[in-house]
Amino acid sequence: MVESILRSGRVIWPWIGISGEDVTPALALREELSTQEGVMIRRVWPGSPAAESGLREGDVLLALDDSPVSTLRSLQRLMREELRVGQQIGVEYRRGSRSKSLRLTLEEMPR
Image 1 (tube, rainbow, N blue to C red):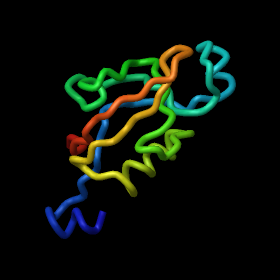
Image 2: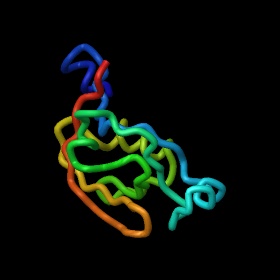
Image 3: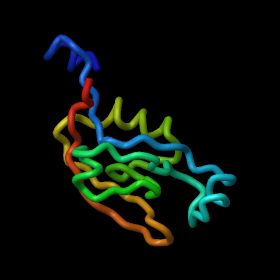
Image 4: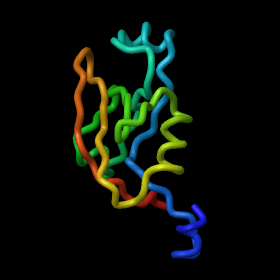
């Protein structure tokens, strides 16, 4: 964060373009999910890296660049502390009962 302020005069956060919710046992049961961890995608922003890569509402994020995503908080921590705008990352996720993976390039979070 300090680096982005020094370079550009403002904080620049990386963005994949989703909103989500923690997968809990209750959510997993209600949505008939095959996992009880991760972040369920509730919205994919049009034109975002997530949309361009093919992520959909209902997919469950499990890992970004080999770092586990067990909660929304862990996703936010990864985005703010470990990942950078312009970085290409691997995304592990579940769609229904199938494990899938893809690559996407992080963009700057819109203001």
